[in-house]
Amino acid sequence: MTTVSVEHYLQRIGYQGSLTPTLSTLNQLHLAHLLAVPFENLDISLNRPISLELPAILHKIVNLNRGGFCYELNSAFAWLIAEIGFPVELLSASTFDGKSLGPEFDHMLLMVEIDTTVFADVGFGDSFLLPIFPAHKPAFQLDRYYRLESDGKRWILEQRFETGGWKPLYIFDLKPHPVSHFEAMCDYHQTSKASNFTRKTICSRATERGRATYTNGRFILTEAAHREESIVGNKAILDDLLKQQFGISLDENDLQQLISVAHSQGPVTV
Image (cartoon, rainbow, N blue to C red; front, side, top):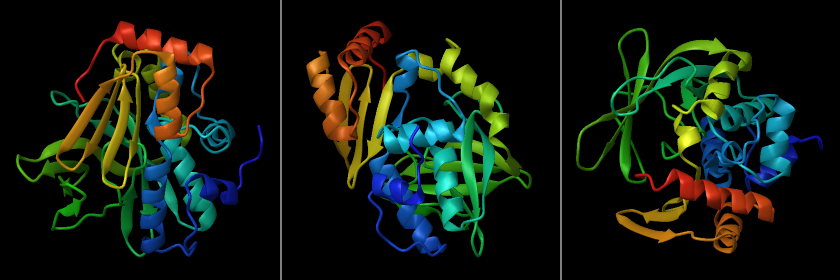
């Protein structure tokens, strides 16, 4: 593996701004990461083990121009901002699936200390674009509101669109963890038939006006209230899509495998 430097990482996310560890810098790095590095689980669909060793994660994201899921993306981003000078810790979250609450270490997010405590997360897919912090007033980002509610021990991240009620996304406390504590759940999400990541292939990236998503043989482009959806029916279309929308190049065998997996998984609601 080629050694990854801060400079290489910043080139990967197209960032050329200040490196002074301030909230403004963190905001810009966070947004640049989400616009450049996709949330994706292609390796799971390709039967490739995902390692939580930091050199492997950085090589995949920076040198191979790939993305990853929460454990990879937030581990990598934590390394980047720590190298720049931000105090950062890994936190464990349990996610809501609409019906029930998941286990501990189901998700990884980051706690960053600047002048106050701020929470960063570049690994939850369609979620907040800028770091958030506890505040009485909900934060509006792009097309929805976010807020953090506390029960005195834990924090709940909630989301609400212009119409409709608040929806819980995940719950977490402020206890820092080493990356090794996430290994069992990382393995679970790669291997268990009960995991969403073994039942759904996804590659999704924030855009300036919305989100571009490939999932189970479909490409979905959303911008504000507008949504376009198309079928990705063969490996040539998939190859072009992954390159143009996500900067990912795969060989023909991998592309054919993803097409076959899409046929077996069937469509999902996004």
